[in-house]
Amino acid sequence: MDIRRIGIAGFAAVALGLAGCAGTGSAPTDNGADNSGADQAGVTTIEFWSNHPGSSKALEEEMIAAFEAENPDIKVKLTDAGKNYEEVAQKFNAALSGGQVPDLVVASDVTWFNFALNDQLAPLDELLDPADTADYVPSLYDEYVLNDKHFAVPYARSTPLFYYNKDMWQAAGLPDRGPNTWQEWNDEFAPKLAQA
Image (tube, rainbow, N blue to C red; front, top):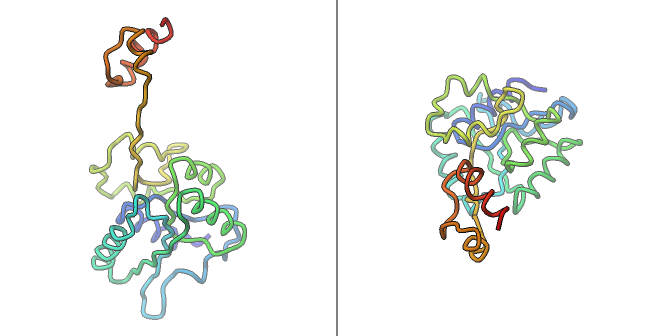
């Protein structure tokens, strides 16, 4: 594993607010050797695989341009890696088995965990420690921790929806709204629904 590449990739993940740093623990160490690294002019190219969550390609290109302006010795190659998180994960998984792995990859809040569990992502802690992470929502930022190590940073989060059956709510004597907190769900809503 090329630790220098991992470091640069991790730095870019922090700077761009991307979802992960792709180093591999199980793939051969020469995987990806040709797709990034410093060229003869001292410019390092980082390959970033994305599915452009929420049609965000223009925003990604804008973030990359801002990053490159602040870091003229680093260029980011944005690669369309699939239409959704599953396609990106499949492509990344195939690359781990013998292809060229990217330096950065967008991973879902589910798939990053599997890659981290299998030592296929590099921890970002040394890069995150000096970075200002105050803009991240703490619960989202801490969601990417495994064994006390950060393997990713929040990038594009989906907004979950809460659906409920109004008839069941009314039968349980609950207000016509969802619970405001998990505590309210556990203490008030769930017991009343179980009784109804």
